Image 1 (cartoon, rainbow, N blue to C red):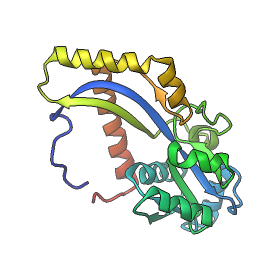
Image 2: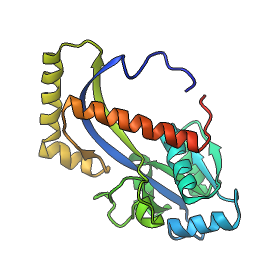
Image 3: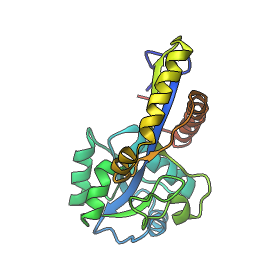
Image 4: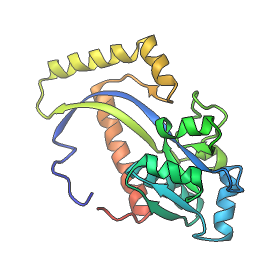
Length: 219
C-alpha cells in the first residue's frame, strides 16, 4: 500500500507470536513441468510465457521473489479472490498459483493440481513429499511465510502484555491445538514479546526488499 493509516513500528505493542504457515507453489496438471526446476527451465527458454495467478500480497510476492532469485520472468494475472484464482488454475486458464495451505493443500491432495514446492525454509510435515523452494532450485535464502501474531495498542501496560503472552503460549503448547493446526501446515512457535518484535523487524525488511527487487508498485 502506498500509505497506511498507522505506523506499524509505533502503533502497536508486540504480545505473542502464534505461528506460521507456508504457501504451496503449484501448477495446472497439463503444464509439462513436474518440478519447480523444470518450470524455471521452461520460463528461461521462453521469457514471459509462463503466467501465474495472485489474489493477495503474499501470493504475488512469494512468486515474484522466487522468479527474481531464479532469474526468470513470469506474467502476473491478478484476481480478486483466492478461490477464483484456484478455479482458473484447475481449469488451465493460468499455469501457476502460489497459495496458503488452506486453499492449496486440498487441491494438491485430490490431484486436481500439481504441487511443486513449499515456500518455507523447512519442509512441511503436512506435505513432506514437497521440497522447499531452496531445495528445488539450489537456493539458500528463499523463505516467504504467512505468520500470525497478537499485538496490543502501544502503551499497553507490561503486566497485561505479559498476561496475554502467557495465555497465548499456553494455548500454543496444547497438544489438541498443535494436532488441529498440523493438518493445515500451521507451525506453532511460542515466544516472548521481544522475540515477536525482532521477528517483525526482520520480516518487514525481507518483504520490503522482495517487493523492491520484484519492482512491485504500491497500490
